[in-house]
Structure formats: structure tokens, C-alpha cells
Amino acid sequence: MRKLSKLAAAGLTSAAAFLATVSHALAQSTDYLYDTAFNTAYTVGSGLSVAFIVLYCCLAIVGLAYLVFTIIMIVDAAKRTDEQLPNKVLWILVMLFVPLGTVVYFFAVKKKLDAGK
Image (tube, rainbow, N blue to C red):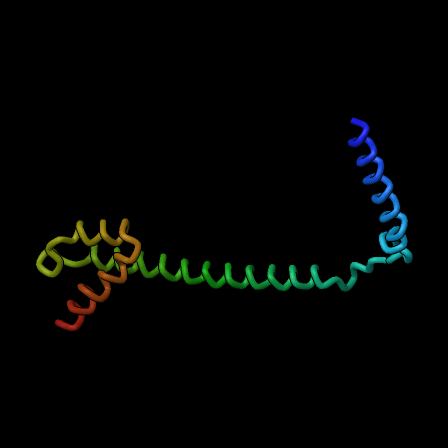
């Protein structure tokens, strides 16, 4: 027990001596005034925000264009006669529930039927 207390005392003494020598390095010698008017973190964050807003707007425009295209293709399929498009209901369901069903209908059916006119 005596040996352990001597070892602990030596450890504490050396830690105190170490902290005494490096205390000037750990102390803040000047008072920094942080100017937030031009901070790179704010400017980078602002730039990324603008980029994401532009990306979101572009994706919204593409989504709206695809929605309009889907509506036009569904109306086209509904106007076709049974002789032109025998499985009309199936194509309308494909356009509604398959993600790229409208594009498949456009290339597989509409272009072929319009070219045959």
C-alpha cells in the first residue's frame, strides 16, 4: 500500500510539473473577435443551399413535364378504338402503375399507330 501511494504521489507530481510547463501554451493569449460577416462556413452553406434549390426546381419541372406527358398518353389510349388498341384497359393500367409505362406505350404503340396512318 505504501508503494502504491508513493507511485501515485510521483504521478501527481509529474503531472503537475507537466501542466505547469505547458500552461502558457494552453492559455489563450489574445481575445479573438469573430466576424460572422465573412465566414467561409456560411458562404459554403449558402452556396450549397442555392445549388440544392436549383436542383429541386429542375427536378420539379421534369416531374411536371412527365405528369403532363402521362396524361396526354392516357387520353390518347382512351381515344383509340378497340381495333387500333385491343387491350386498352391494360395499357392505361400500365401507364398508371408502372413507373416508365408511359414511355413504353409511346414507343411501342403510339409511334407505330401514328406511322400507320
